[in-house]
Length: 184
Image 1: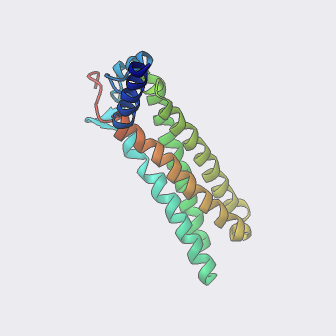
Image 2: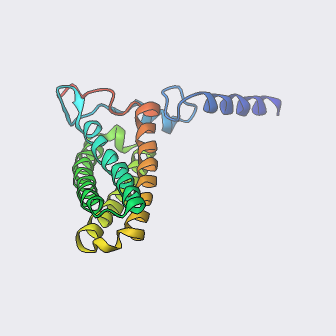
Image 3: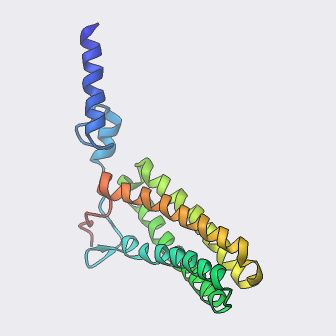
């Protein structure tokens, strides 16, 4: 009985100290996932395109929140116009990043096999839906930017943080996007 409790404590210690997906993981299914290729297949000159594109929607989502705060603070309609452009840019660049990210997800079995990839993809799609609503609100109902647009900007910023956290988890915990496919 002592041997099994020591074994389970040893495995628990390994799980706490090691990455989620590691070649020496005690679970054989997780070892199989760790053995799969995670190299980026959609890259230019060795740089993964999705990793290059995601910075733009992130920046524009945060900028839109800042612009909304400026508009709330001083009421200058100039900020409405700036917010319309930044929200639109967040949505357009988000669509571009989503298309490339989806292609990468579907093209690379090692990325597809990781739960964190699907968490990131779902969070990014939720973010894209919020950014689209925010841009549409500014185009068709600009007088509703306060409070609705501001709340959408806050929600988009939170969704950006959540999707970015899962994307960072893919890079730092799983090494996704760090290796470029030899097909490049």
